[in-house]
Length: 266
Image (cartoon, rainbow, N blue to C red; front, side, top):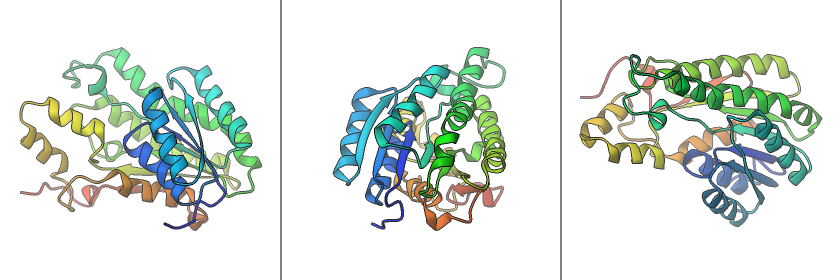
């Protein structure tokens, strides 16, 4: 494993499982000095923290509700206090309509679901980044912000209307933050396709026709399979690293080729 994140103090939100866990552990394996694991799930977050320590970095767990502005600011403060500063803020946490209600299509979507999705996926990123900005600007270790957007922020969705709209907003927020925080802090986003996370697998297990749903989820991938969380983590950690020192305001697909065409594999 490379040392391209050597010495960096990293905060990863939504790090208890899936892509967030992979990003946190990979950051440690790539030389990060410390990783703050932020999530709502204490036991799973502590499991991630132990994996981070085993990979060679200091780790702390911060429990935070990303719908609560005070909690978000406390998350930043506790991370800075633990690590003695902040160099890398990775916004991985996100929520999708279907987690909050059944049959979350356009006609049935509830206002409370819309608000929660936007609060977690967009507003929390803004508040955390704004509160972290003074610490990032003080960093002499290549400060950056990396956001987890989605291909759903580019293409329309049938059953994740709020999620898709929120990820489109996050793409624009990424570009605006890159401008606002330049030249001191770089800001980029990655766009995952269908990734084999615990949440995705739980969703597959809940549907009546698993094979049809799986084919629908991965059918636009030119690489004919689900992506792996570590494949996303590689891109996230690259964007956070000094290897990407001339990269800011960028939006990078990690989607198996989904956005390259308008088709579905037969």
